[in-house]
Image 1: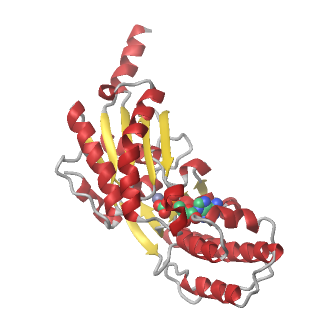
Image 2: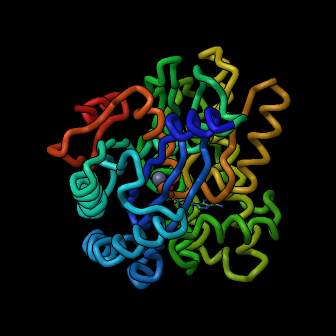
Image 3: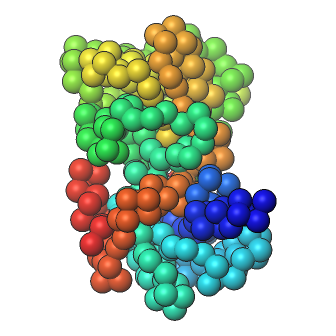
Length: 352
Ligand code: KG4
Ligand code: ZN
């Protein structure tokens, strides 16, 4: 028994992670067996509410104000002191530069002060690996659909966890389309979840939306045509009554979810992979989840959908991606730069 406990003590690794790439100040501590010791998020929604979107300067300031409190709370919930963690991780790219700098520099200070290794994580890698260490997370190779307010893309992850983009949006991200149309409808930012709720009360056949890019075989996405069509209906005063709003949301949600599902399953077929990992805020959409589950069953695809809580931005996903890096000894220098944009193919520049 004593030997057993000793063995566990040697191999269990605790990582504290910081995620501040946009409007959430998130700090989490995750164990190497996947146990979430703590998961703290301060959402800045109310700071940005009156502007209808994220204001980077206000975001940076709010991160600075909150990050120490969130860190203390994460350590206290995990019943740990700073010196008890084994490594320190943070999102270093991509995102809003000011907000990213707050988390990445705080992580450097934490690592330096406690003499712990630093691990820089790419935000998309975090979304893709949000379920890593879960018992039903697929072994690579797998395809990943990441669909959020800032990104909509399909990625192939190989056996070595090397990630390659096989398609991406040519204009807006799907979440951005939901948010922009939601704003026109008078909903508060971010509106994806409210559109999802309203849609459940509506008739999806009432408003016609053409399928985007239907004559192309590539795996890119485009939402600008749908957005223009949606704005036309709104400007023609066709979306006024409560029922019209619900019908409109149902039709708009339907076309976006059908489009995302179609492209994803075409890609699975083309690349002959039988596992699919989905992530990002829009992966919380109830209709999209239903479509993906239905198609996965029909096509015998092993589908991993994170619980709703881990679809939107969080620090648990950064800690999990960091565990994979820790196991490969992919550490980062304290001199590491932070990048507002960085293709996933170049994520290894974060390891130095
Ligand atoms: O991943 P995330 O938290 O942040 C980014 O990295 O962008 O995603 C936020 C996005 C927002 O655009 C929000 O409207 C959307 O996710 N979202 C949803 C739902 N919940 C959040 N979109 C559609 N349906 C939902 N249920
Ligand atoms: Zn995100």
